[in-house]
Image 1: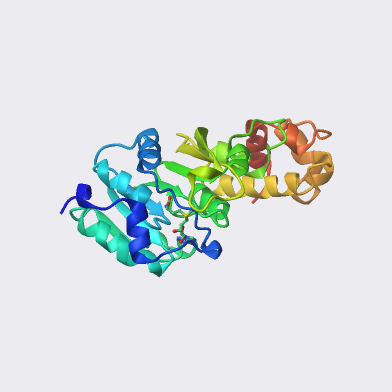
Image 2 (image 1 turned 120 degrees about the vertical axis):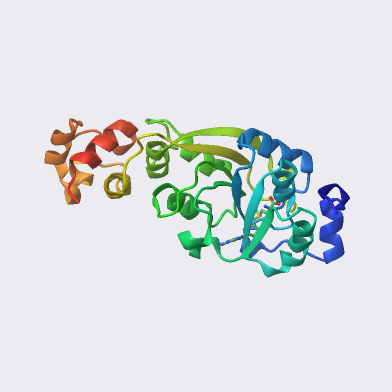
Length: 271
Ligand code: SAM
């Protein structure tokens, strides 16, 4: 039994009588040309272990396995397990399935070193990303599908409309770039919005846990009142004195500050 023996994804789904559930954010990629392209662009190293969140019917999983990678796939919806178990039977021991809510995983549930590749459910994509950027389990790299508007926020430069807390935290911890855009029509069923694949690679010398925590606090205060000047929005974490200590203009607004300036504010702020 090899991966080549599997029927097309649409047939597998139809045979299992499965339809998408909105509450699980289910929009499937059934075209293997697309999932293979995502895996190619992810530039994963041979022999690497990949954690996939939300394999669903397994289109992205198949493409990962075809590339010779070992995959740990975490799926919350038990209806997909028989399909995924069939895929595992064709994968020569390289697919491990976890039936779990990805938001509730403990570091010990996952391999110590792994990349993440996922077409994320829209409703949990941002909390999962923040967890991987600043939490206890950190992937070696991430290739993630988001709705386009979220992808734009992740890579947004200072001064742009999309620039916000997510941009600062993501770019402080990782080098982030959009690999490809996908129209809503690429998914079954089609969502209301377009999507994009973002690759995030941890920066050498990225903030340690204590600095990342302070960065979260400072960005929450600054962007929580983004129209206000920093001397006022940052009042709870040091206000004008903090701006002066970090060499940041106190009359500036959050969206005008670079990631380096936010890091300076975080460094100068207390625990
Ligand atoms: N990877 C598949 C694809 O590309 O066709 C499915 C992607 S679909 C956008 C999101 C998948 O994540 C669904 O299979 C859904 O059941 C699963 N899911 C939703 N919330 C989840 C959670 N909290 N933890 C794990 N999986 C989840």
